[in-house]
Amino acid sequence: MAAVAGSGVSRLLGRAWPRLGRPMSSGAHGEEGSGRMWKALTYFVALPGVAVSMLNVFLKSKHAEHERPEFIGFPHLRIRSKRPSGSGRVSAEVIEHLERLALVDFGSQEAVARLEKAIAFADRLGAVDTDGVEPMESVLEDRCLYLRSDNVVEGNCAEELLQNSHRVVEEYFVAP
Image (cartoon, rainbow, N blue to C red; front, top):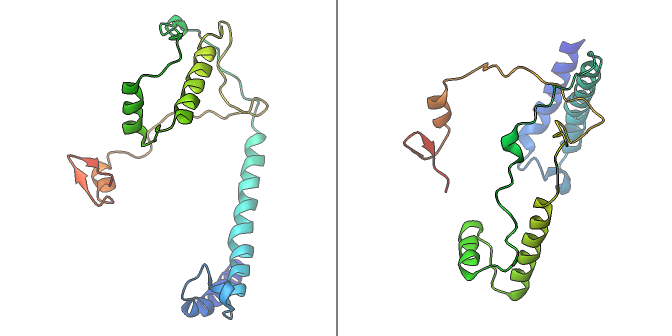
């Protein structure tokens, strides 16, 4: 049955594919067969993909309850050495540096005022006492986050990965 459905899809896509100049916009120009191709892709690729994903989530949810690992409060995580600066003013040097780093223009007083407000807000967050608050392991507290062992399945393929880059300098990708 699957072979018959597969051959029907390939025939359907095979007939529609050569006539398509630009596959993404072909339906807008009224080309014959483009609607049929998208319908086939929806029924034979997209919907089965969604169904398999939903089945995977359903089957994974049937596992035994996920046990949350014991929280170990490391003392070095509670050190707050950087206190709020207090003034909330941003110097011209800092603004210049931020403009170079982030490619943002702080040319107007409004932009500088917005930056100072954001820094003041972040300073207030730093003063919040979080002693005894366990870190979250997932942002969705009502759902289990399945943990898996961190085992290397594949590796030592740096040369193969670097072959995909247009430019490489000393075993590093070079961004434009």
